[in-house]
Length: 106
View 1 (cartoon, rainbow, N blue to C red):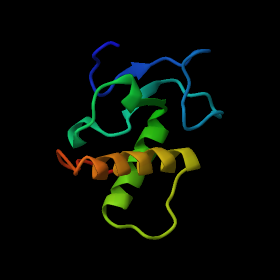
View 2 (cartoon, rainbow, N blue to C red):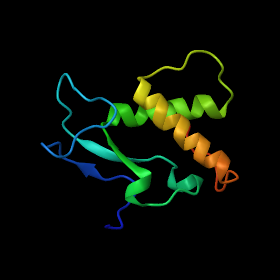
View 3 (tube, one colour):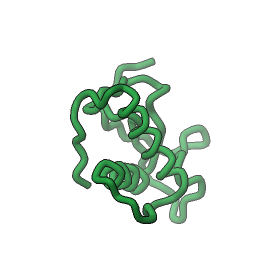
């Protein structure tokens, strides 16, 4: 496992694809890592804590996390997978006792 910074740009390939938007129209030109439990919120920079997403999916996950943090109780925006990763990140943060700080203002 390489120790990489929080934002790493990847090129899509046969083996590297967005994990929230399975089929892209148009095809994603760049991909990046999303830390399920973000580093600023106590997450580890490990493979188990990362998913590969397109920039749109990454923004949407963070936006959903912000809505969950602020107590949003209406229908959430985004795809089911974006919502899944946002819920998972917030659940892991809650389970860890909310270390660090919530840092998203999408």
